[in-house]
Image 1 (cartoon, helix red, strand yellow):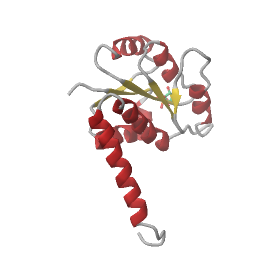
Image 2 (cartoon, rainbow, N blue to C red; image 1 turned 60 degrees about the horizontal axis):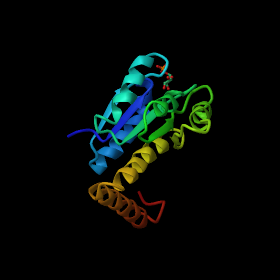
Image 3 (cartoon, rainbow, N blue to C red; image 1 turned 120 degrees about the vertical axis):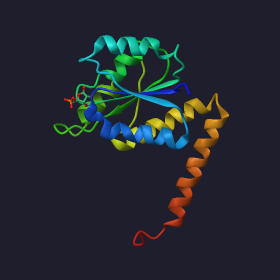
Length: 163
Ligand code: RP5
């Protein structure tokens, strides 16, 4: 099935975090693709990927990057489809570098920035589902079911001492 969400990341080292976006999309049944695209190591590939995204059917791009994390912003600059940025938790500055690099886009080119690390990766997938759900009721239902199950799990495990 044609991918509706493209997950890209600057390095294979980002996969540990970004796999959670892929897993969450998988749980919702949303077709997606995964690819390493680096803004500074493979800039031409980044331009080609972003320029081709809309025509090949992608509706959202989730971009994860760490450090001087310009991948989400540069991707957003080359496409009109929504770009969601996931700041990778770095060793040197704990991901604050990634967060500020992604979130502080100058006016004109927006990137929807999520939390640092795993929470951001999961939430990027859920936000992508919400965006896609505006047009495709099937995926809105999948998101509704996800929320229901999440609520039930919390209600069923109300005593934190019980595993
Ligand atoms: C960024 O540099 C990547 O997104 C990654 O988070 C960071 C470090 O990359 P590696 O040196 O691990 O390849 O471009």
